[in-house]
Length: 357
Image 1 (cartoon, one colour):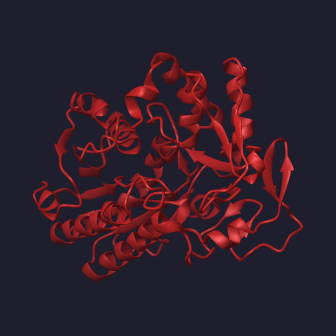
Image 2 (spheres, rainbow, N blue to C red):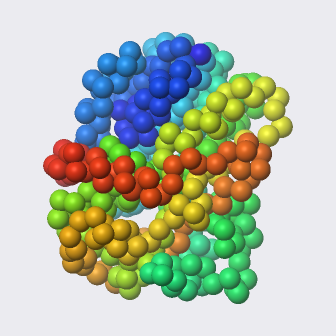
């Protein structure tokens, strides 16, 4: 099987590529990356040493995509991952749409022309913000938990947000580009008869993730703590009670191998939550406590005001993926945090290498 991974020199793309090589899941891996993200160049030579062909290019340019070699499957891991993209004054809304939507369209045209399968790595942020923001929370052990006695919106419960919850706007500009990409991918696959799978992932985390909060709060927090960089609890009273789940990218492999083997006319659901769920979730305050147990303590600044699109608790419910695919994440949150911290110890200047100005 020949495989194309977009954004291959990013954290998710490079981690998947290395894991796929280790498992012998592909006869050839080709990757494309525009190296626009600080730190991505660090992954080029290690991937090439594994006989992975890394092609400089930009999926926003149709000509770059059209000239890619023919493959059997595409994993789309290229995106601007920040929920504040396009509204933070640092990036433009047009660039966000070009990165996350126009690039996907070019890839779908490539799949149509070459009859290649398509796997879209989507996000928990496709889910509608108002219902999530209005959940009644209680604080348990330094972390928000939904009050179990409240009337939950359809598709949300104590175990997390399921695929049944609405993706109606507002979901942020970032979320809109991803949910639109999902719809287009499914329509292209149905219309032009090639397989499409959409995996909505929780926060990706693991060693080697670039030190930027938009690219993974767990790695950013640990590296910043290790390097004594400024950290802030932002929003929700500045308490750090907000909660996210996490998932190691390599844990996607057992699911991907099954999806690739499914027949074109498979009746299995095409859109799945893929996450560690409540068992792999943690608040910032709890993460600070974990960091303090490994490193010496430091003061975290408190910013009480919320930012646009902030939500107190975002945990995906992977029950459907577990039921349908018999899939479970293999890497515990403790192991993920240890892996990130070990990498931080071995790379003490990681933030300066991987954070763009």
